Length: 257
Image (cartoon, rainbow, N blue to C red; front, side, top):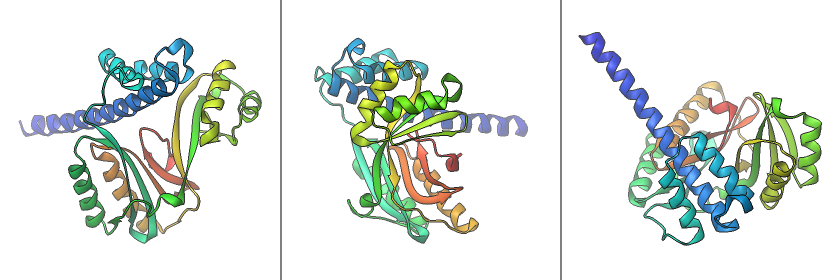
């Protein structure tokens, strides 16, 4: 009987983790859909960004009424719901800067959860602007490596304003500055290059390399921050295997897996 109890507890924990991930993914997709509809209108046939966001939402089995509400919030047909977008900044141990993005209907709860985590792990939650200047917003697109060749992708992306094209983990990653994000997305769509994911992310200007035990301690804190219900993405200046550690539904940091 004890064995069955342990097995059920393990299954329950996995389900809770999967549910948290789905909740985070849906929250991020709702933001994407709302933003796309606000900037380009609610017709996906005339709005490339919205069309791409809707395709990703369907792939994640996002509920139809949730999608429709996000579109209506973006077009102004539906007033904003209780949740609002938030950002928080702080330092993990060993001088690692941390920038947190999220969405919450209870700011007091979110701040309390974050402050407790930072404090319990030897860091501190800072004021607005305390680390934001260390990060730059970038556009990021992922295209499956078997969907095109690097030269074709490079020519299309760079001509539209992309900064670089890299290959990693079976996918091409196109990086742009914030202002070129929409233009590059439109160019990729017009060229028939299937974008698997895209987002505005934050890239650190400089990074910090730590000894293994220090690195693992900081990563443990970042993983716990990312697990909070109101957090969607976490960016840091911690370098692991040549890549800044970033976790969340908007980012794909090899160091975070």
